[in-house]
Image (cartoon, rainbow, N blue to C red):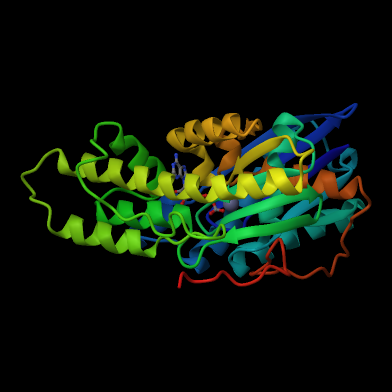
Length: 350
Ligand code: KG4
Ligand code: ZN
């Protein structure tokens, strides 16, 4: 099978072709056009600019991805696009392009959940078998999920406020570092002493597997505004403290989920990390240690497949289409689209 995948849910326009050669997945093309420069003057993502930029870049990227894969539309077995969750303008641009190709080339269409695409990436890169425990940490989401099959996810925890990536991004802004904040903080932290500034670890040791990061952001703001501008090491020290605090929170919550998962799914063999924050080297090292202690394999896709990309959409489309899960050409987009619609709302600490 060869599937074209289109990702336009946020601020990356990404197109990929993923195939399977006798059951072994192959990424035949994977192109990402970042919109950082378009949004930089505004200090955040402007939805209308994102939608227009997707429109500007998408046609060229689709042609380039097919050329890199040396395939024409006729050779495709399906077209997949992220249909949510995300910014509605971008979702409309990507899904309409995919539907147009699917209609013109008479191929099946897959409306892919962007979160499911992150969740399934470890099956593209490492052939991970269900069930597995997933820490999904990105700019918009922080979730722990038991993944038991395509379309079958049970949410064990989510964030009460900011996502982990948002905590990195907002802290970076307070430190005068560029967007995206995660890589900027990780780089700055390399030269810093994480123990100089004491930051809170919201939810640490609490029941359940929910996260909270807004208290951390407030503490970072207080420390950042009181910093002595002549203190050359302070920025790196605070960046290191932020990275450590976020990792401590993620590890504490994941450790609880691991205990639950091992009881509930004794046959489950893997702890998987996905989403942009899973590109973080220190987080990956600590998750690997946590998994090893629990007798689980740790799997995280290479960093370029943790952050938003087209290959994950194409792969999720492939997984769905080979199960016969095609979508009609009038399938809607979903700006909100939880993986586990039955999950209870997160419980604030008492
Ligand atoms: O999955 P993603 O590319 O987009 C969303 O679906 O949100 O995740 C982007 C997020 C941003 O918040 C970014 O700061 C964070 O992932 N991120 C990182 C790293 N690389 C990207 N956070 C920590 N360390 C990194 N190395
Ligand atoms: Zn994402």
